[in-house]
Image (cartoon, rainbow, N blue to C red; front, side, top):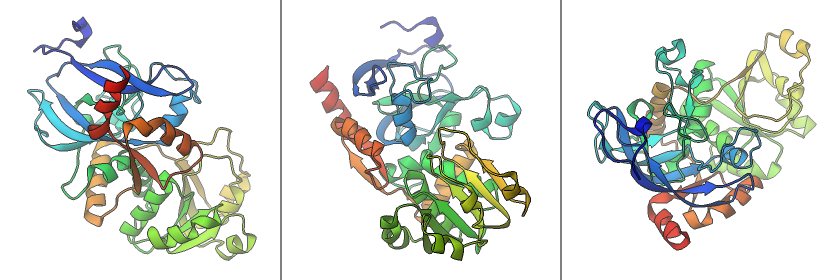
Length: 370
């Protein structure tokens, strides 16, 4: 297939054939789709994808829950793999490097946010999938065999970080790390509450402990107590529906990372915060939040939000995670299992993140279906 003018670069190389797992409509069922990736630009890194995490937002996008889905859609923004080629201007990476790509693949690279390293706040941010790139093509994500990305949006995997367990950190990891860093919830001895123990929450617990904090998990599921304390290393566990447990923890926490995407009453949770305490939302409930102003005003409390993080922070997060042995708890699945995995994710039947073994299984699925 001849490249379009938009796909041509100054030093033209052929577009690459690739294959992905795509949904054709909002039923969200994934099946193989032959695609092309752009030719290697001077600043581009070509990556053979080996693993891709399945994020809860993939499910929302596939089902068009946010009313902005474009089909065919290839999801996936927790990409880990190996560099196969770089453009002539690329200095940070070379063939054979272990690398990752998270939620974004481009931005304007010139606005105030980009200049400060917060590409995630750029009005021109281009998402890894379901976005329109500068050349007018729709971006396809990591449930695919390879990807071509501007070097600014590629991170290096430290030697100590496994690709499969590290992949989810590119979304879940930076989503909790960034607000902890910028809201001062990364100080040894402070008390951090983690609300919700799923893909985001379990990583927040691990980062809290890596920062030397006291970590309390707040969950509506009493059955998660053992894993929170034993497997993840939390210091305490509160069942949010237990009035006595909630009362005993009143005014004890410096901050809460709220990972819950359901609409739940927030007022009782603010009661857990000390004066000047902060709740940072990283989940996305469907309906608007209701909170009496007095809850914030009376003891100077803060409700804030955060979305992923900039590229330098993402690299910093991966490096710190490798140093402290922080990885996601994962269940590795083959490409043939991906629709079942999505069904299980919709029922929260995973501890705590599915990761697709793209490198070993995608080609087989593509070969049998096409």
